[in-house]
Picture 1 (cartoon, rainbow, N blue to C red):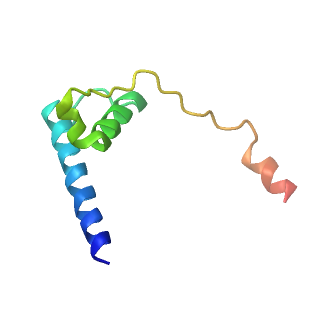
Picture 2 (cartoon, rainbow, N blue to C red):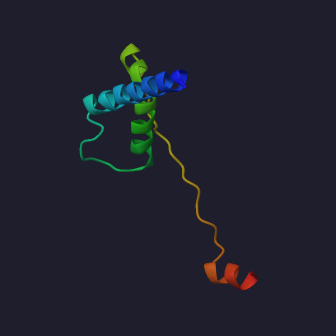
Length: 79
């Protein structure tokens, strides 16, 4: 049990350092809100302290899957 607590504490501190790095880079300021921006913020937070070793993760091309063309009524009638 003790190892789990230590790992959890390290993980929380790691993520907090990542949030701090994203804050320092002004990623939370009002601006574009799109997939690439959110991806960059997420990568920065997950990278944590590695950000201070020169890593600057960025997402430039983000493609989300398109919804299927099947209409809801067609799927319900098939059931």
